[in-house]
Image (tube, rainbow, N blue to C red; front, side):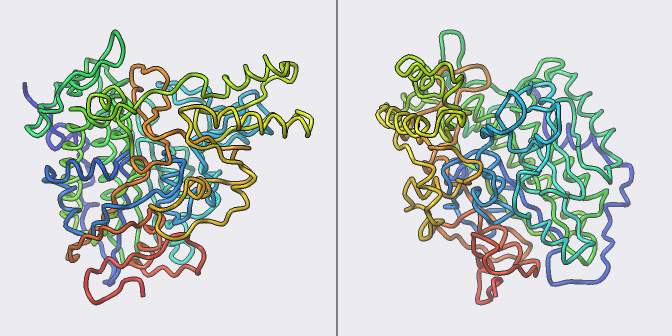
Length: 557
């Protein structure tokens, strides 16, 4: 069956009428790159990078010819999308950035739904991320208001007002956490097209771009041919009595928009829009430096829907490699002097049903009692506390747990101690950490791979937003009690399969080298700052500048 390829079937339909805008309009020369491209591939773990590296022939192959750090780390315990993206272009840990998780609980918020989404602005009345649906993405107001520190693009604009700081992603939280509070232009997918809530400039090409996507999604999509190196992974894995994963090739029926996100075409669309932004807005065409943040989300959706070990992920990464190669080729034709960094917001863990067949019998799904609901039932039954309403709050089985603040002070202390003890006894829980004790800890130093669980949790702990206690699950426990369509595997643990991510830097003429020692994603912003000559005061970053020159020179001096 004919394969629908990105180059011929997707980029072509967003051809820009103002092609002249793609020409180089440089005003003077500079020894600094005029365009920074920061790419985050959601859920692209070091394990996946290592497993598929030998198969790359496109954009990912190009990046492996630069400065390669295969043991990058998202050092924190809350390995979720929002905290991970918050580290990349701020250079600080999530706790300092205020982005402790994708969702947390705010018991003081004046609405019934106390769950706060990291990229919403709950100050706006009548909005709540809790109303999210696949079609509408909820009625919340997307915002980077919760991000407490500036991004690199925001820092750059304070000293170079002409510089542009832009972002585009499949997810609002990726675009917002990398772009910051005041990007010049920002877009993300919102169910039926890319849109923005950013006041000011609007991309003229966007309406046609979205119309072309809608037309594409109205047509059926043929399966993607299975590459030869993916054949051994093309095997069905039952996840319940009625469904299995492991053989899907991303075919879509007519009007198949609902499954668009969990496909390589989703990243193709983001890269196509990124290329449009560079061309139409002439990013990197002048003597000053512009920054374009790109969040590629399909790998995460594929990982959640099908796991990381099947033919779906294999096909997805093969297509990602091709799509990135096409994107870089487009930039080359524009003759921009650009530097690229590619990393990930977190890693990921395969579904336990497949891991059980691959020598990991300890991989299992979480028990239902590991939850706030389970704890509440204990306190209702044993302590007769139902009159206080909900006693324990949490957004998920792992991470932050909160105690009802209306309880009498002495009772709150007793409930907290008892809840922590109950959780600590559970066979699927590795550690239960006291929030008050974490708040007293300094930020960890030394090799990130040697940090204790408490140190990992400390870097994603914020005293005003984090829970009264933190629950960390044992290695191999998937915090999804029952697999369902589109959600069979996940991430979020303090373990290295979720923490380790590749960090790749590339610039024309760069001397290739590979540094296997550990570095961190908080090192990316200070490194990019050094490359573009942006001076930042000591202590502003949690990370350090990485010397990626590869020779006797040192870009960090």
